[in-house]
Length: 274
Image (tube, rainbow, N blue to C red; front, side, top):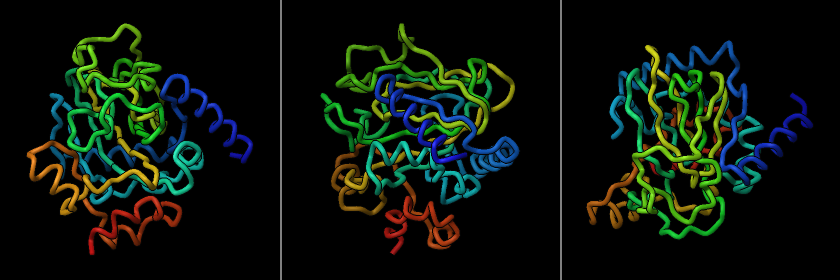
């Protein structure tokens, strides 16, 4: 892909993110490689994962510590180009999480992702300023369709000063009039402004729908509350009994084996292993 083609895709993505809050980049993981990565991530969840609060959805938080099959693509020039355009050149990855919608999973509640989920200890209080502070990318290791449970989104909801996790007057468990499902072929990546309302959709097929959430943060966004053993986590989570995500440190041998272009995205997690 030429520089001009990449620039066009990034420009189009930025336009859609500004208006709708989401965009799908096609073919980030090549078609002939995505199947092996899907099988690997699914096996990792079965061996090391658990279930989310949504019935029928499996997960493995801190996925990178257990599986590195997907790492060559995390610095894709289209995805990273969008992240850097919105968050600055020193962007870093805050989460890597596997999500599997098993056949028959239930629909999940509307929410926005960290740090905008009002049920988390480390959230930004509503009303939010109209600023992009965090990006969620959902990697489609299986096809995302209406039948498989493509992620439900509410276009334009990223401009709302609150979301249904924060008692915004919207029932988080009911369909929303303008909702739609983000669709894409296996290997595509859904990019969301993390403020965008989204929800888990039911998988109506007989095969698991496998995906990954990889979130990108600017250098200035404090991630310490996510880190086990940090002062911020002790003060805001452990001492208050609050609820918050926990991101495992990246082992030094895992970090050393990462592609060079990907290492800067995880350097902040390795320091916590000292």
